[in-house]
Length: 222
Image 1: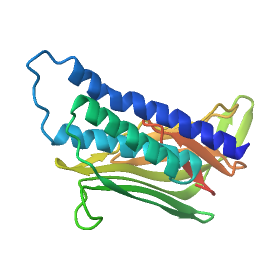
Image 2: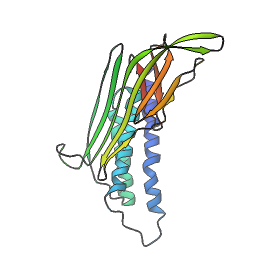
Image 3: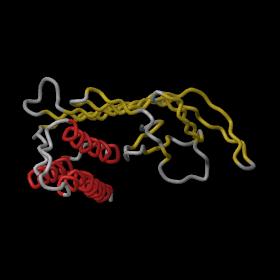
Image 4: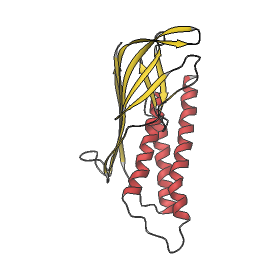
């Protein structure tokens, strides 16, 4: 069942990748004649960054970078590239996933490098996602007729995107609890990539997804 769910998720992400990558192709195909030549630059690098982010979103759910999904979505991109003359440079990818957690602290890192040649030196595009959480204290929260004990965590979370434009830092990523619960989850953005997260103390952890579909797990196992 786990393998089937993973395969289904991989196919879903691949479909989403295809739709997003097709957007530039649609713009290109609808450009009146004579067409404007799309130069290799920010737009092309941004398409590659979007592809890398989709790999990260998939990895955050699967627990690993799926080679099949990476390969198939890359092939689809370059099919569009050839068909619509998008002028996206060919790249070689290097992926990294790392992390650790204890009872009071944890972190997770997803990193994708896209090189235009040898995998050394400065990459053409790099997409870097890292989050870290730390337990702060307990507090009590009134829920209906009950007074419940909650755990309070600090979460730092950031996306960094490197390309021809330099460095782009994304911090306000609209974290939302994954799934529904009878107990309210407290999540408040404090600014500069810092969040306050609270959930019932008997839970092992709490899972969120950001606006790009990347999964964030606060607590043991996160």
